[in-house]
Amino acid sequence: MHPTPGAENSGPYAKYLEERNRTLAALSLPLITSTTVTQKDILKFCAMFAPFDVEGLKKVRLGNDYDGGYIFIDDFSDVGLVISCGISNDVTCDVAFADMGKPVVQFDHTVDGPPVKHPKFDFRKQAIDALGSIPGSVKLWDVVNGVGEPSKPDLLLKIDIDGDEWATFANFPIRELKRFRQISCEFHWSSRLKDPEHFALCLRAIENIRKAFFPSHLHANNFVGFVNVMGVPIPEVFEATFMNSDLYRPSAAQKGASTNLDKPNNPDAPDLYLASPFRIS
Image (tube, rainbow, N blue to C red):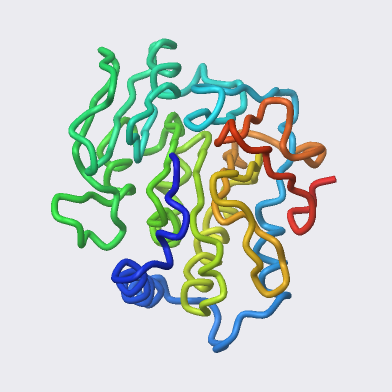
């Protein structure tokens, strides 16, 4: 999705985010008690996103060439259902899955439906909200509990929900999280990592993911560029793919970012180059 530069830091919205993130951090039982975030904290955080190739398998791009395209591992035969959160005005990736015969359940409270129809789509005008504070919203783990067989890892997640991904993953029960074979997520507003309470929330989120998954791809969204967080350059918005560690094995570290499958989200600007602090050579 095309993020709006500066939206996270502007006027009433910034105040809303500050209050919301304090509530979310308290809900998530932050793992740090320090009143500051250090460079060492940021480097540790970034290292948890360092991507690896997947043993015996290749990557594939699904969806648009630019914004709206996602990178996955090309292994979908055992995926029984795709959950797509935050569709906005682009469902080209969802169409690719639907054309494979995969049912796609879509969530987005900001639109009245997908821009194109497909018989495999099941659209729900609902927000994914870990607190349940948005009227009509649903918690993602409740969605998972309501589909398929609880013991079967046959789901795939594509999620782009403008910052609420942190609270969702920070509070996601591992049993339900492990239902996903692959997760592709756009992570937002790295500049807020300077705030200790927000950092605690984000750290808890990635640590929770890493209990059951390893990263297989990383790409920076060039619509908003880099931010300086305690002297560490981090993309303000970035995309990451994760693989279920019970089902897949990592091999060599990813070489180069962007890769030949990546495209700049904004085709009118050069893609962003990632290396340190994400340990990409």
